[in-house]
Image 1: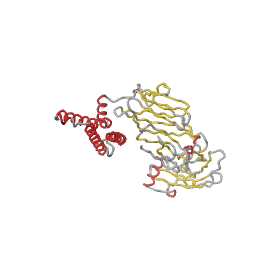
Image 2: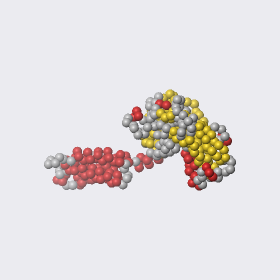
Image 3: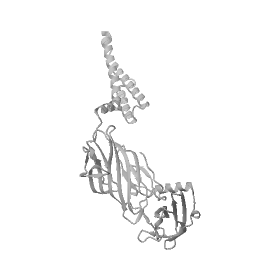
Image 4: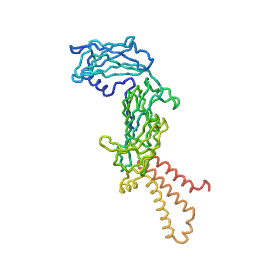
Length: 410
């Protein structure tokens, strides 16, 4: 499974902006003393967005001034007063530049991007108290988009897009250390089909990591109040012309959809309800939908009438498959030995035929089984047989050999 990592929760500045800050700082690191002659006084206020929350007083706050043309970053520091007010003195104005306010509060880093034109106004930065209640999160819409189907390898490439909302006035801060039972898990979790690979996750959430969990993965990022988006892509296989898997929807969904290009019009998706087609970026999509899915209830999706490889590719895949050779080689060896024994029996003198007893036949069968096990071991050591096929097949051959082996002293 491919995992995409986010920044730590205390690095809440957007990733692209962080990279810009680092790049500029590496080129010409400067501080507030090396700016041009035109400066202003920047005033603002830090506000607690949680009802009844304390004023964010006596806290450090920084202003990063970014000049992308000259390749400079200047940093100004201040401290909020008893009412949350702050001021930065002699801030150099930057034509076409940007300014980023940053402040840490209750284990979270909050930031605000400010244009040069707005520096003359009172600049507000809103912070929130924290909560550990995952129930503040609702998924407004989750859509699974069939991006591509590789019919030769029978593999589906999917894109999932989630619009979620923290409707409270507190930031959900996941607990990552004291988890004693599943009920304690308070971060976002998502399910994946069996055999899913090449997982890639993107999010507008500040910080956090993507970690494997159960049959899917989890995003440990904090979730501030407001609307956010999570997208992820992956690939998963199917056999025959159908596949089914449980889409658990652990956070629930007010609207859940599956979309497939209209060019795949033969595909059926159950038990979702078919809806009118939609156009996305000039491409027509088939739509299936379910509404008001409770948390954890989910749906078991059944995809049928999926594209199939050509007859030639299917024959090649069958002939190169491990199942065929695991069955064919032992059977072929056993049949060859039986034919050899029969030929010897018919060619032998009559008196010799009487010596072909049941014990002789059993001995020949044992030899064929021993050879079959040796061939199987050799193919496994050479990487031609997967372990999940090798182990049960070898156990079966050993059991058959055990049945033909007489007890000691017999």
